[in-house]
Image (tube, rainbow over all chains, first blue to last red; front, side):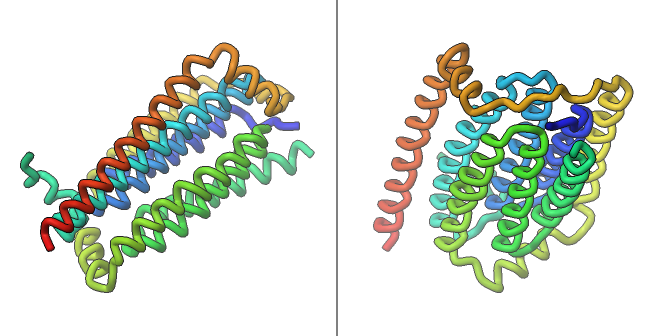
Length: 102
Length: 174
């Protein structure tokens, strides 16, 4: 059924990863930094699935499942930390995190 | 058939890229999340055109369903208002974003150059069925599944702990 060249899938994954990286670097809102990390993980998943479909193996999709299983804890712990920080500081500025002590 | 699949792939890929660009540039957090959902749905279509229907379904259910709902809950709990939008616009303004964008674009150009310079032949014609994926998960990747379960348990305990401390911290402040 499929005949998508692997290069196209890899390029799409690369574009998504670069966009997520730019988001991590240029946003200062902690919530949107977490969103950008999700985008980066998603780009990596696209690359895995593209490579898996190139050789017709299930391994690429298995690796995507592992990425999914790594993304969920990352978001849960990240958002819990973000809520704790917001309750202390009433701010989401990533630049003010360097003032934390202890 | 082949042509249709490719058209679907490129259309969905374009939608994913545009939605992602909008998601990382919106000043309002909820708007960014809406564009993120569009981007994830477009990536699900991309997975489907690449012959991975199970992964496409999981992308919709877990990413667009569960993870984005977590983000929306947090936005609700933070109760960000108009004041925050002004702050966010201020944070986004200025020249600060030019450097990161140029660096990311350079990295991306390098990756694309490497992929294009060493072209790979077209994908083989096969779809990995859910059965194959399940057999691989509980065969050669069994250790990874166990590690993922440990990771999820650790995240559960960690999130519970952080939630408890934030609540007690709020009570202590009041």
